[in-house]
Image (cartoon, rainbow, N blue to C red):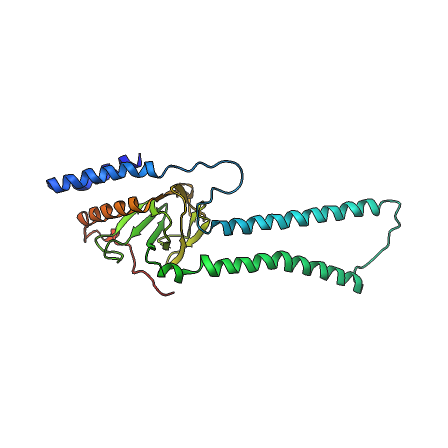
Length: 294
């Protein structure tokens, strides 16, 4: 279905142009590539319980953090249940009651010691690992920007869709060779994707559950995030912030392609964008100059 829509779009674009032999050859090549893309990016089925299938280079860091949190919660729950069971058995109706304010030095020392152990082992462990992961990976935009393979992507959220813009061969945004897509984002496998995003109306939240990343899109503000896919396939894009009556419809699709197929798609789409460029269509030029420094 996606390939059919894509081919119809190309035909409409070229219908106003004279169909010379070179244009016909390009049209045939574009149709063949568009037919091959869905086959190369088969939908990854979900199975079992838990989180969606992880296809991100750094997704295991998020999963580990949540899994270890569950482990700590289970351990504390078992300890508390055992403590209560001992209290019920030991302090039964045959045990004489003793009134205690709990303000003695011994009581305060025990309570503080237990609280400190829980805080430093559980919360301290989660805090240190979370900050380390943020600094080394998720917020390490200098590393991503320095990688020559990095694909830069601008995303404009609005009620109720995701508009994406790729810079063309000139490397600049908002020029005639830009690739603009609607609710359909394609990225190459094993390549850092550096995203800058904003919104035109209300707060949205760009969410890739299979990539374990999420970032708010805020009107008047450009936020950033990055991810890198390690598996081919088609994955959901959702909005994680209630943004109005049709929030439930704000879904899109992320397709991870082999690098060579992505490059073919990018070249053909950029050429098509140049042919259909209209300098008077002001609404189409919503891109911004890429922010290198924050």
